[in-house]
Length: 334
Image (cartoon, rainbow, N blue to C red; front, side, top):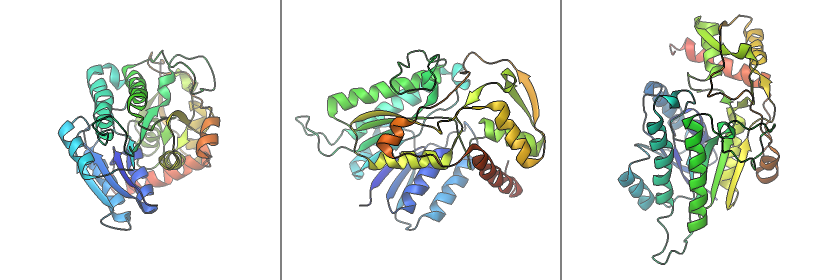
């Protein structure tokens, strides 16, 4: 049965890909994005153009430019549409950037989530009884694991030592989701995403920076001589995991979405250099206090509950990303 889904952050990297996948299978999507200048709004508008051009039915996609903190707007959206699911991807990204403006990160990532949660429970009767509330899927982050020493990361870890305001705000939103599940029986799933890369990736992310270094000659700082490890996960696998969460009835769950494989940054760089037959312009830099030395997802829960099975290897993912990047740059984009 086709669904009606609200996707926040619909013009961004992951949000546009999720929106496109939902439309491709026949769902109706209301996509929301404020097109903020964290990176070029022109890129986001280009993402939207691709999404709209791929929609099988022009009536299936509606885009709203707006802020998730706008209570009046959110209230109208939930009054006008009976959403089956909310896929909440919008937020302020960037671990290191969150240090310079923690108040903004908390305002958007926590208060924005609160506004959406309030919208989602508006179907409650005056007596507080639920009337078929939407499933709320929240895009969280692997960085909530913070200073944990347990490897690989398991969802039952305490996650009480975040290393920057960004993961702290995301963890707080996860906890707020539990509160709304407890009080109002809102189905809430937090998906902890691990180092996502691929087409439409943000220009501040490492995979994109390395491609810029290879093809445009830009310098890229490499921390700890490339000895940090990351669970690099291709965007198509992440999208499949998110769609599975949209479809599966759950109460309150936290689920890791990664590849389940931790790869040295130095090896990731080496694969890019091998595939392009070019050298990246790298500069060494000390590890920031905000960064985790290793991320590594235990994805057994995702396999069990979602049937999640990441199929794109790191080498395959890099090759696909580079093919997209080269075409993107050839078309005059940077």
